[in-house]
Image 1 (cartoon, rainbow, N blue to C red):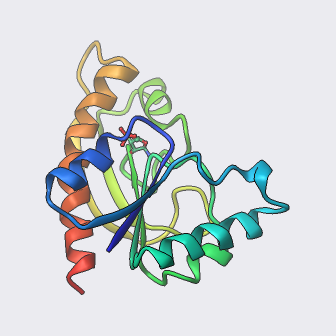
Image 2: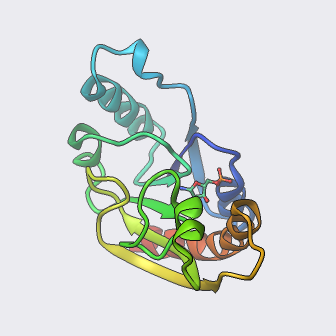
Length: 162
Ligand code: GRF
């Protein structure tokens, strides 16, 4: 069973559902940090809840918070993130804007295992896309998301089959 953590619009969650993957639990703003004494307590509560739903693989699909080891140790090698760049280049929340500002010729989508860093952790799959003349953050991000919607279900399907 898959658990998905989202903070954004949820198009990657939709791609997982469209692929017929067994999504058992979705958490978005349900686990607000201010409801808990610390990040460790929040992460423990979130891991407890996901485990109760039978989750074995966790997908961060636009989830904007860092996870602590209190969470990651509960799902070893089974927490993945999708990011709109060719990691390790351009980690962070403003990645698409930064790639355009830097004038890169190519961008892409990366699916990687999550560790405690920002968009770090071993890369599982990556796909490239050309940056076009006149691209804005919105047009480039939309083309990257087409890659994400193909790549993420494939990698998650493979992880579930382990
Ligand atoms: C995706 O582009 C992902 O790479 C980034 O956040 C975005 C989430 O989009 N981490 P969505 O909520 O899945 O539509």
